[in-house]
Image (cartoon, rainbow, N blue to C red; front, side, top):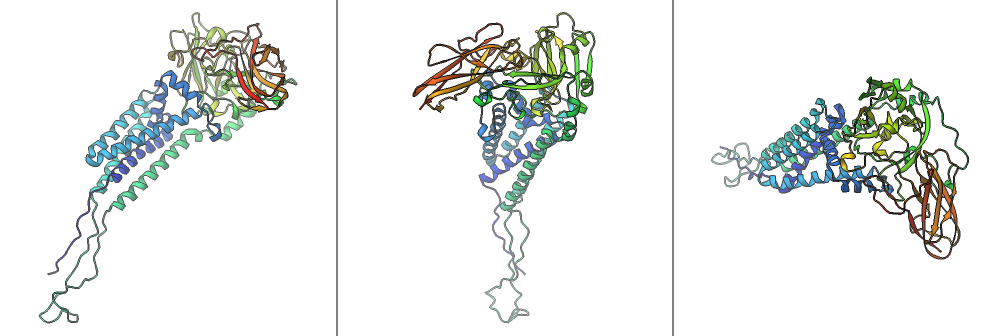
Length: 556
């Protein structure tokens, strides 16, 4: 006989292995959900849907804190930093939950499986309750949960198959005198013959397989992100629109002296890349011009269904408008100025026939965001409300509303500036738009404000003559005067730039004589109706900030 001995079985795993399996299973779930969403419906990613739900359900204080985040040094300006921060925060929470579940699963595997199911249900619910839900959106959360559970089961199946290499030892047959076919060997000294090693599943196999699944999941998520973040927009087709966006009614040439950029004010027109961005879209909607449709309905005599080409066939008008966010604090930077080309919103509504009692234009974005604009304001003959198609000579940038957005001079963006415009319904104020439900005012006219751009806070400047500079705005009323004062002294009237339009900002500059030491400069503006910017400080909620800006600086 040939007796065989096996090494002791080394089945089982450490806590680290259990945590790794849980992490990889959840990452696989998120990655595949993101990929399927990118293929069929970008808004249906469970990870994305949960983040969107957090935005919708966040208390006002947390939302305003998010808007204030600003990290331009690392490429995360205001309006982008909050979105990246939220997504990173949710990812960190997921990883922590996965790690804790993995530790628990080390003792009871059903706990880890239950956590994957609970997370899947949360993602499924977030997708189903999204304001832009469609039946096809079910594919991503279902795929996500199935892949997570499958990865978990398969990896633990490997764990159950763990063995150590089995090495067989054999003893040669021994005749009474000598081993058969060999030289003489004492019968008490068995000789090790060529070992026979099986192909086992080891802990190393589990680690390698987990790593492969994790890398694949990250790759799937990256592909899904690319598919859903603009890869479907044909950039060449978008660029080809430019010649068709030439206005029939062009804005007058910019006059000399429209800005004081040489003295420290911003340029009159804000480059598209620098234009402020505030919205709730964690993933920018991607709608091609060829697929675009706008529905106008509700309290109208006739409904309209307009394609992008339908809008292009209407007279295109160019106008320069300064847009301002209601969340802009005193001396804040949530304000920019651009040249927009589009069609008259007033003419479009007159064509539809607005019925009596239609108090607001309730507009909806392709990402489900809603906005209520006072109908009476848009119907003013000289208001200049428009559906914008181009911005600073280019088709609208994706993040600023491509292919179509609303622009209404004189109103804060939360009641006027719907991006990725999908639907217009004429209705009453009984229907509440996104920000109205969160405590903001119904009408939102822009308040008279000024800002100090030079000097910067705590800046050190030279003693002697110094030119301070900044901007002032009171859209649709214009700016007639700006005054500054140094260290609480008498007010001094500043020089104004050439007025371009009452719907755009206006720059100011003032020459000051500085002694050595600490100084404080304040500014206040007067609008075209003679109303002076109020001194009393007020927070942006519910209808815009007020107060005189003040900058402290040094002269040396």
